[in-house]
Image (cartoon, rainbow, N blue to C red; front, side, top):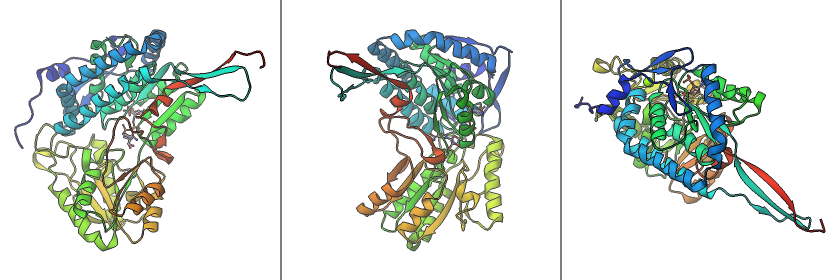
Length: 497
Ligand code: NAP
Ligand code: MG
């Protein structure tokens, strides 16, 4: 272990103080005074105490968002942009602090939290800040004379955002950004495992001049999320998380008919043809699954390798996996942090054990590092092969550093096997055959296909899943459809109508 990264004084101070709910611009205790503790997954040690919201708190937060809505919706677009740019700048100023909080609460290496996560978050916030002045309706050439017909794009009202723990900063701003840009107000419920960065974002939003009640934050558990999803005054629920909870949210929203958008799980195939740059492909396949300890919705968890190069590419990925330094996120040498919790670690280990019991062959990893790391939820990057296409290792989202590798013989075969999943979030294809690359891109059932690369995002490019990976597209101009309603206006302007 190298000398650990020193915590900024502001981070230590943040951890030491108690944390309330953000409702109407104020930090307040839960109505019943309940709190919960958030933990450091690298050590299992408690980090901070935060308020635990219940349904009464959710009511208060929604009421605050409702009260703040008319003024926020009416604010001039350029002024909304200015406020949002100040928020983005505040987040940029506080990147070190936010990244340290993310490393402590989530476990990921600090350099990833800083260089990837906070960087993406700031980029997204600036992107969304540009939208208030660019939201437009259309005019229509109707087939009856004497009318002027146009659409207005209007905000929905109170939106709810429910987010997961794997990229707690990006997941929050990916919903705060478009919701506020479109003139909505928001109640955010971050994951119970990683409440800290959302709370810090709330402080920064207030400092930037986001008016009270426009962004409310209720930390808590699934019951608080559930109360939000069935609240009659919530017009839209934006959810990122597991497919199972996504289903529960859709059911809950059936009563109020709130809009629902879902970014859910995946079991994404990464396909390597023999004609590809095999070293680059092996490198990409390694990071596609092991980045963020495999706790990545787009993790390339099924690796299909064309048979003539199967052993060679598999050995290349295994060698790289074995060389990844697993360790605490505050150790600058760490490339792979712990899993989020003891429960998640146990779940992932069960997949490996049951898989081996059913005949899978362990290529590399599979065990927990000992010594100084024994108290944290660490697991070595793991690769298994000889896995049946129908086995849980091949069909279920594990959300851990576990890769299943398969050999394939033809393009048609690998398309069928890659598509044989209830999920359809992402896919990767490695080939130097131009026509094949485009054939594959068209044939794969996924919301995003990466060709000779993997895991790229940009705020301008829509992202989302098909099938049980979700509904709706976040990012890009398309996300504005999720946070606005179109109104058609007919104006009689001629006598002949
Ligand atoms: P999760 O268990 O589904 O939780 C997500 C959020 O939902 C948390 O804030 C959770 O609160 C809340 N929640 C739980 N039960 C609820 C209910 N009945 N009603 C409303 N909200 C409820 O997911 P996770 O374990 O945090 O995250 C991992 C999952 O997220 C994976 O499946 C992954 O694929 C998916 N994910 C998808 C994307 C994407 O963009 N497609 C991105 C990242 C992650 P608690 O924290 O209290 O449980
Ligand atoms: Mg934590």
